[in-house]
Amino acid sequence: MGESHDERVYEIKELGELPDGGGRYGVLGWPVSHSLSPAFQRAGFAALGIAAQYVKIAVPPEGLAEAVAVLKERQFSGWNCTLPHKVAMYDLVDERAPSAERLGGVNTVARKEDGRLCGFNTDGEGWLVAIRESFQVEVRDLRVMILGAGGAGRGLAVQAALEKCRRLVLVNRTIEKARELHEHLRTLLRTEPWEGSDQRIEIIPWDEDRIGQELGGIDLLVNATSVGLRPADSPLLPASLLLPSLLVYDTIYRPARTRLLQDAAKAGARVANGLGMLLHQGAASLSIWTGREAPTDAMRTALNSAAALS
Ligand code: ATR
Image (cartoon, rainbow, N blue to C red; front, side, top):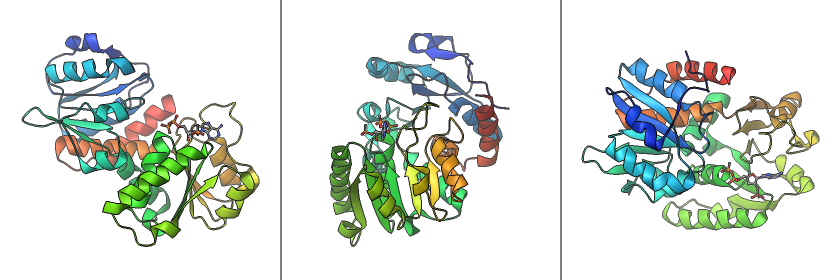
């Protein structure tokens, strides 16, 4: 069964206390105590019959370079990075897979046989699989609106553009950030040409009337803002804008049903939360580390019970 969220969190200087035996893996974050990754990664290793440890490691932003040095010295085989380390880890690895270059950050590190560290980013792929699994559709066939252009929104927008989805509408409260993201996509699309992308990608201001007008031509609405994490948050969008024809994906998974998902479900839309993304980015990490197909059923069962306990 899943591990509870209050199990031991290691600090960098405590990693010498890890018992010997098995491969060493972990998740680096700040804070990290609520991470659900150990619960389902351990289940994944166990289902593959691989002896491995996977621990939570608390690393403050200013300690990340030291942490990487210690993880190397302690022969860690790989690790995940969560907030706020994904961008900084990009510069701390020896080489980067195309996924990390395109998404501009690293959420998975694997130590190669020669000791070099390779950075990957499985977030985009995890999102694609989550959408497929939740709604039985492919992102490339959809007209997509992404709310939020921070770290999460940026990654999803890049992935949607790489998929050459039918339409991509980017909305951010601070419109300048959406414009920067648009510029980034244009640069990216110079090497990954997407015919008609000038017409297909659009930036719109955070204006409820404007968002409402656009939603009639959207299939998949994605929340990649942080709104909904706190119970006191005001609704991200007025419920009246949410149409039954929409697929609504919230990258938030705690709470399991944000106000947005509740309102969308009430409106008759199909909805899913961010647990699928969490599962599938982690399953992709496990595949990178082991070279094997991830046992997603076992990982999902462990994740769901850990999420229910948290
Ligand atoms: P993350 O890495 O989770 O994306 P982030 O980079 O801090 O975190 O980004 C948070 C996102 O939530 C941003 O898109 C932010 O909008 P701004 O760029 O305008 O700050 C968005 N966000 C946070 N609070 C919001 C609010 N009340 N309404 C709309 N968007 C909000």
